[in-house]
Length: 188
Image 1: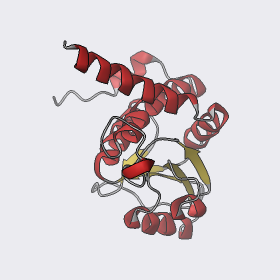
Image 2: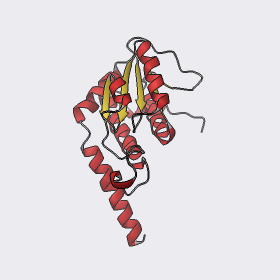
Image 3: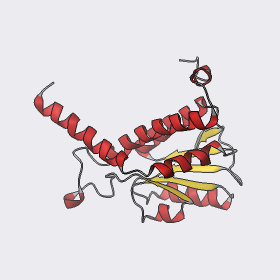
């Protein structure tokens, strides 16, 4: 590995660590309790955030939680007590705002992951997990802080945050690694 590549890895890892160090652990725990107690969980994200959110949904399924992804044919309607988990780093994604309104109107709780505490989505959310990372809302000019392009720091932080949440949820609901493995597909 060249010195330049090594430096880029070190910088990117330091950026991710810095972002995750600023996420409020008490709010992570509260979000996990919310998910653990929900009769139904439906998740959504746009673009590359959607990839992270879908990976989290897979792990929630492995934990035995009742989870679906918006757009899948088997996504149930949301209702009272259910949780709609949405990711919108910039906090102004029109699809997320619309789906949050639908979930709210159905009596569900809107759990938002965002980097923008004052965004339209944050104002509409019932509960927000703030991930203080660069997104496409602040990736240009003097506002650019990351060596990584566009919203990559936010997306990478989502992946790591979700993995930690899986561990917290596993302990919270008493799921064993063997039970999780037993729910893994055999259709690969």
